[in-house]
Image 1 (cartoon, chains in turn green, blue):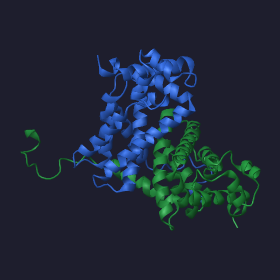
Image 2 (cartoon, one colour; image 1 turned 90 degrees about the horizontal axis):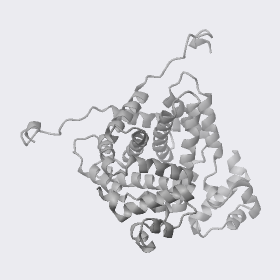
Image 3 (cartoon, one colour; image 1 turned 90 degrees about the vertical axis):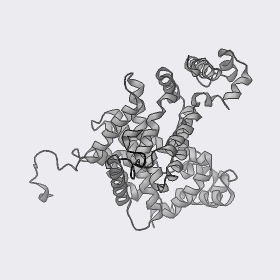
Image 4 (cartoon, chains in turn purple, yellow; image 1 turned 120 degrees about the vertical axis):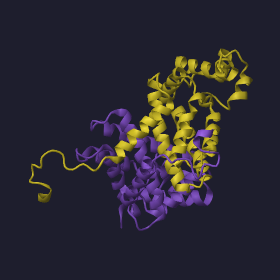
Length: 201
Length: 201
């Protein structure tokens, strides 16, 4: 059984999600979460600083991403370094079923949605300096991180919906989608010029 | 004199920024801001719901962007619709000097930095449906919005540093930068193969 399935932290995360879904985030207490997980309330605080944080476990993902960026082949282009790092983190993600339910609970609670934004910004702020340490200038580093996080967001939303594709495959697909959107030449005026052509206006 | 320079809202924004810089965000009250702007405290609340919000005026920018997306030439590619809309909003921005100081105050205050993230997410959530109304599917719409907001962020940081370029020019420059980063063919192993070439590993 994978570690997350059996350990206290995983039990707390699943119990919290069950309670948030059933009673709502605001009407669920840390004591209830601990109780439902078969633990004492003080054990909760060994794993999470507060009730919100129980849905945002995964500090190990940020550390993993930074490590991947630092360890990447020096010949790899900066954008590919980021794409590889983010595509490689699939094994650290919680199961799809849990993440789908978690996404719905977060979307329904402004306080949780805010926390989600902050977590994403934290990841961007950790990844950009890791790229700078490879010689990328700060402005470009942050720009590429923002773009690759957009690609990642697109890929994750498909990964949650499809059971048979890896995150790395879906990131490659989203990258190709973006490349196509950006490569399209400017279109000329659509259809026949009914007003007498471009010169007439 | 442009409207923002003379009106009550502008006076409140500038007074708040002065006080936040001098005394800190936490140690500045709404009464002090109103007083410094030569207004009564209750006038403050005609313009802003709270003290944080005084740095995030500009709901008119979101409405402008949505309008631009809806009114764009039907023949324009979705990504170009977004690039044009965001590049066209320069006239609605506060002066560079104000925005540079504002950026420093926001970066120094977690509560303001959070509000900044939420405002950006609100803009993304307003722009994506506007693109959907042009026939773009929801997943692609949100993806393109996220990418164009990354381009915009890159362009704005340069726009704040340079006095002689328009936002639209800097967005075109950032778009070209991204296109180049994405078009680069995968590099092969750097330098001579000291280990006997790719087949030996």
